[in-house]
Image (cartoon, rainbow, N blue to C red; front, side, top):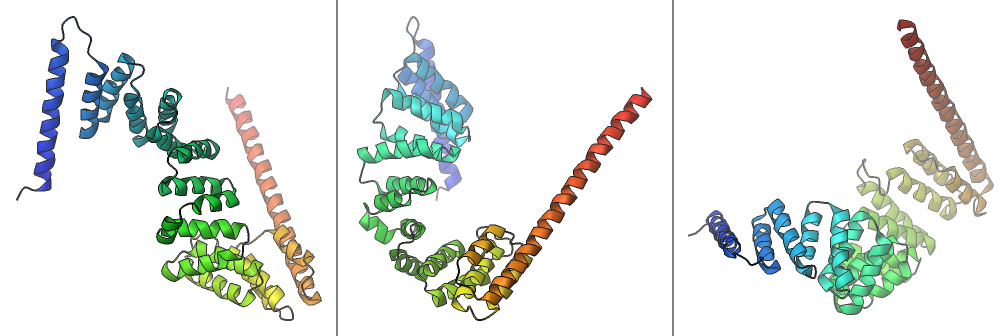
Length: 339
């Protein structure tokens, strides 16, 4: 039986023979310029071998030999992308689009490259055009919805996903993004979509978002259950969400749902002990007018303590800055004395 290494070795030998043959043809063309197609063939042979520097050199020659030879520019973009030179990759792909605005491959590549660069508005423009050309592509639709979600255009993301009902029934990533898009709009439909997704899959952030929607619609018992399950499953290193963030959410629900109890205050103090320090968020709960007088008083005490701690930390940092500045001045004086 021929093993995989043997097949790869034979393939590489074949590619090298092809490259040698093409180079022979080019060197034999006395009085004739090599064509862009010949340069392109050599470049792609090197690309298939994984020899990116050689591929880049020959593809650049192909592009220079024929300024309209867009395949060379597209593949130069692929090489730049694989090497994480995203700025260069975007220039190559978008250069293709200036000559051929309806080039689907270049549009898709340019859009994805812009996502990697964090240029989501440009990515959105590319995906909008791409989906006008290939509206049936649910993969491109999903990526476009991701971009819209990142831009906080949640209603538009929801509408894009609804254009692919079959994929939405089958694709778990699309289902979750759909639930999240609805959840960010506080739509009650998000409750069922999150619940159905969580029956089959596990994700702490998704469960936390599900609990937030339940809380918004005043399903307090269910919200507490989901917040607590999230907290139980969260690793200590979690940052999205933080454990103290989940504990704060539990406290917020308890303060309303069990207003005559001090359990909400106890949980709030626990969140603060774990690192929660958002004074404005606690003051927002106090201003909501749904708390008992005793709990309002207790929360104000927590806020006052947080303010004192913040002021003390500010003083410590200021003192540290002054000491560092003094050390630098003393060091400069010593240098001048030695001179």
